[in-house]
Image (cartoon, rainbow, N blue to C red; front, side, top):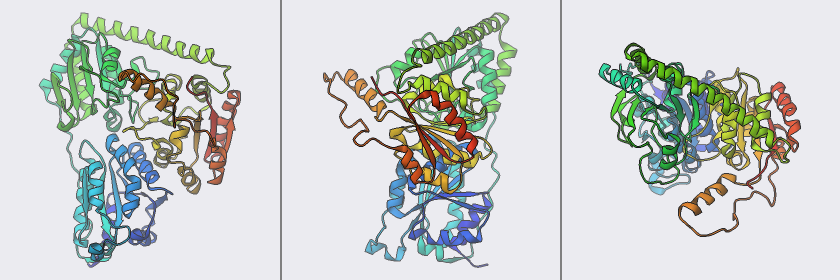
Amino acid sequence: MILRGRHVFMDSLVAHGVEKIFGNPGTTESPLIDSLIDYPQIDYVVALHEGVAVGAASHYAQASGKTAVVSLHAAPGLGNGIGMIYGALKANSPIIVTAGQQDTRMRLNEPVLYHDLVGMAAPVTKWSVQAESADEIAPIMRRAWKIANDPPMGPVFVALPINVMEQETAIAASSPATLYTAGQPAPDGVTAIAQMLAGARKPVIIAGDDIGRSGAQDELVALAEAAGAEVWHELLHMHAPLPSRHACAKGPLPADAAGIRKALDGADVVLMIGGAFFDDVWYAPGTPFPDGARIAQIETAPATLAHKLPVEIGLTGHLPDTLRRIGLALAGNARDGEKTAATARYTQLQDQKAADTAAQRDRAARSWDRRPASMARGMAEIAQAMPQDTIVVDESITASIDLARSLDLAGVGSYFGARGGGIGQGVAGALGVKIAQPDRPVLAISGDGSAMYSIQSLWTAAHHDLPIVYVILANREYRVLKHNLDAFRQRFDAGSNHPYVTMDLNGPALDFVHLAQGMGVSAERIEDPDALGDALRRAFDSGKPCLIELAVEGKP
């Protein structure tokens, strides 16, 4: 049977179970757009900016467990999306990014919109390729799916020239293979790590995002409780590895080796699980681990094992199965005295969690009457008003500590952050999370500066009737940059105390109410935090996308 390239491309999506394409259409995407009516099982999620499309797709992949597909527009569109593709790469999101390319018969004339798309995308993807004939589309798509999902997962780029999409071919789309790649962990490695934990005076676990992606939260909880181990995660994280109120959950680590070392002070065993440890923000000399600590690492594949840091024991395997086996070995081999010590540590962690929760309530109480609202007061109000099963998409930046200490989140599946450090991911990512989890309430919390990077997301929420509640923390400044400038001056002994040039968002002040209303989203500004709870409840009850601009205090 003779097919056109575009039919093979669309059939490949159907064969791989694709239900959504996130994109911003353009002329070179005409073959794809013109084919949509013949493939009613695939919805096109329209974004007004390519970065929004990629950000939504990345979070959709994380929240659904599926491979996401993005359609961008030639060289300018790919350029607009590259920042978010970088975020997807750091988050290990399995997405296939496509872009229409100009007719290859014109390439020597360098027509409008033409550029080396493969070269543009290569630095921020696992594989970058252009289909040079319709015969290549089926094998390229099959390989793209495999590479995107091989651990560590990540984005793949495919350029689709407009004439190639219209060429005829006899090579049809192929069905995806069922690949059983998660191997069993080496028994000796399981035993060695279990013995290391059993004999520890103060074991610490650092959990990466693969805990969430692999569905290993329950096994991590069981292991941490049995070992009496603190569980930390990285400063920038996509998933929360434990419920926020769990006794072992300690929160994010600092941004440099010295800070991490201080946070882990006293640990004699450090077990890193499922991540590319560490993504430092600042240079600090020395190791991130306390002196004398024994280090072990568990990953799903060898690529990230002992990649950045030396370890004593490294182990690969399917994370839920591997952690379960280590837990069984720990229970079976630990001596009575070691079990007693682990139980005592876990009791201490429970007491400390109760004290930390009380301290956060006191922190909010001390700032309760401030106007504009303190971060602690704002998060306390949100915690009281949001429905119990709410998914939080977090880009609160300088309010993130108050968020983590205030909100009662169920862990994996109830929290999505962002990786890579590029801002704007939260407001865009909430679209993908809501599409992936349509039956759960979704709350996106973003700083005002971050929100402006992808504010067009609001139109997509209205256009596709996605009932997302957006809370914009409006301090009218890049507060995190002010903190970072302070850190720079201290670290480099800059000897300056200049004003924070270019870091204020006044003159004119951003007006998120009118911005939202102009894109079809109802909105209100809250000056008095006493009104926040009722506003949130109204927003969730509306069943429509809503935005609340909350005035919050700036940097002192």
